Length: 365
Image 1: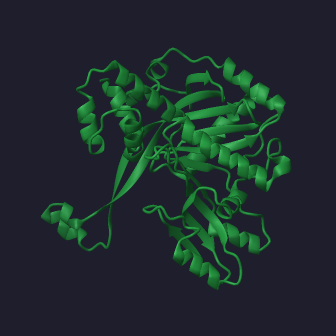
Image 2: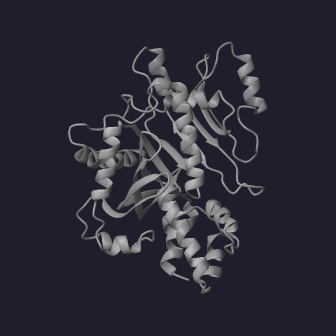
Image 3: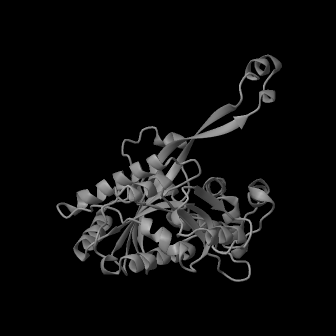
């Protein structure tokens, strides 16, 4: 089986997602990535290879993304379609390899900040895919005992030893315009270790490219998703697995519950604590999961909207309201589960701002 294909899907897709996707598509698995890759690489099965490449293609478009939404007018929407249709996909190593990664040396002579690699249209919308390279830093806690005796004696005087690992990752970033509504999506890859500042910088870059095509009628601000935190929490939508909130007593809480099927809305400690308060809690961060797809619940997408408790303080001080301009959409196998999350976001946007759900733009970026 194609080594580059297996290497890329291992690099891009967390094992928890890949194992569900493989089982649902009849791809043989073992315990973890190492054993599964060892099992697959010796197979010569064109049908399986095609299935894996299809899964990788969908993951490049829909998997592990940090997405911003922009309300656009019909005129802007048509201009964006023309922009996508007018981009020439160069015949180079990047487009030839997509959705597989290229050798990192291929980026050495690249001068463009984003290289177009693919565009396509289906029944839901049309998109343009770019690729770029990002250097990420990972911090790892070490022990003095990990080193030789002479070095260990020096390091024992420190309370904590941190090692840094540097890794280059190839990103696939997507501009998507729906056929059915007036929400433009800009999605950037959101791998583990991706700094939020880097994600916002990529978004600014892609937005600038879109605005160059729009001319005078430019995009202004991404939709503010902060009101959705309260809207989702105070509904029965999905299972809340993480919640950050402040209380009227001045405390700030961060509760997590991912290892059981219990929703945090119904967890006894959470419910009991709320009961003792005289006022409502003020959520500023939420992660919510949905599970569907038969008995195995193959699809388990997760949406995270992350504000800060400091933002809530600005409300109390009658300063500008807190804002969340991007959504982390994770654990998606592909279009089916990603579109489910998008539909829920769209529904809550309509709920919190029905008059402006499609064409207005909130000053938040």
